[in-house]
Length: 356
Image (cartoon, rainbow, N blue to C red):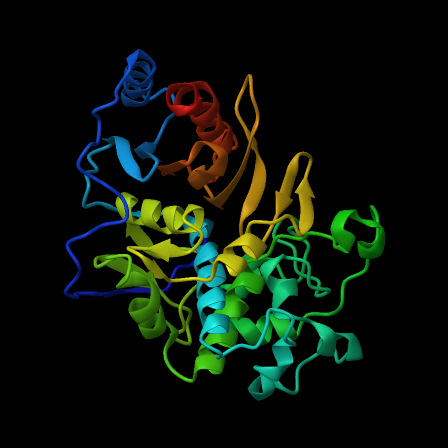
């Protein structure tokens, strides 16, 4: 069981009455297929689904809540919120706090030196290496024997120091990075995502939660969420934090809008393109950008998609070709069928209902 350190911040602001997503038409397009989906989820076929939202062309057309949840319920979507680090990195670069994703992480982490397992190669680790889960540090959440496994990190107060102290990994199985697709080897690890938040906080010279509030949450009218932090009170971009389903939809809609919201460029379109372009192969048929997963969805016709993903089958998904965004929140944590449930919902019910 993961240890979660959290506190609640009340983000109360005065907002524009105009929204980038039209929420007024929810459930006005409920065809027989969607009614079947609703009945199946209600019956428990997909176990602990808590909400399903679908927007097309910027209009919310399907919105259902389950298990005593409603529009105001906040959901812990676990690693879905790793993608917050991607969005905030893009904003920090646009504002000049960070020069580039190619910057060396030690340029921002001088206060973490010295570290254990000294190795000159550590000096070349970049922000991009963390965003793509491809740094050379021995850190792999899919391997319980990994020294950098997240369950070991949660018992350490300084998560970034935990990462830097790790040894350089070897590649005894499979191809080496230079021989792999895109010239990188993927190893998923929450410690890599967590370190990005401290890099950003150091770069901007102020609290990253306040930076996120001013530059991301307020423009998107995200005004009620529970923020999880690390033991050192830094925004936890390893996962956690709790958002309403509509607010998760706004975050993925911002990406499909190429970073624009209410006529304002919140994140540069160039950064969104970088973040949603394959940088490393993560699995069969699945690539990875900057804390975003990339694969095709659909049964008859396949549609390139990118998505935020978290334990339990939690997803915030964009299908650009269909101008479609989807949020599925669940409590199917550590259920081996969880992502299969979410994928089946998208492939069997949502795309046939809202596709071509």
